[in-house]
Length: 325
Image (cartoon, rainbow, N blue to C red; front, side):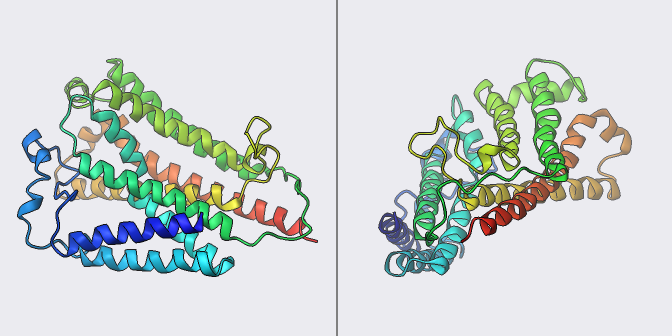
């Protein structure tokens, strides 16, 4: 796995170097946050006409890729805790840069909408590379000698279960339920004109993804307090009964908690700013209370998931220490 991760890092660094030095093959200048026309998407929003790239899309990205090459090379020539730690950090960065949640929604929205496949392909490569580097990190971590195959499963304390249940319930009840009602045409907590805009802007596949992905993420939070979060279930091929690597749960949960909390903070700050500048009123917020509430929801969800992740770290760390000879 370490060699495969090193090859990926070299190949992606070469691609970024080509872009930085003038090639525009596969590059897009489109802003994924803005809906583009079919003509813009076809040309990558005029990418071929760019004389130079923004720093972080050009030479900044080349520098980061060079660092990734060094880290993956270390995983090949000198595996161990240091190499594994660097690989785990690199994997988390790659996965975060792929914006996996948005990636799912963008694939769902591709039906019937102009889609920037260059951007999609680049982020799929980043996601795949992140998972490959994570696998290399797991293989680089030194195996403890004399530790039994089953080190035991520690039950989660009540406070940890409470935070995990909150991290599961918040996206289900606060996001999936209202969005499902809106897709079904029920004006739950929003004005009729806003409901019409929802149906105009969101296709059925995208709506299903919008409802399903947060719900799935919430359900996975239960793994932080469940047996299957510490030991692979019997139905998992090859890995059945083996301990779940701690970082396999900690890295994605930590990344998501930071991302969701940040999103919530940004949303709440935008609401406060809009109120302060007179762009909206309390009455306006109240008329669309379900939409306003989603911003607070993200903040609460991120905090709950973050605390549950910390609790899982403490729980499984204690279990690992107890299993040492």
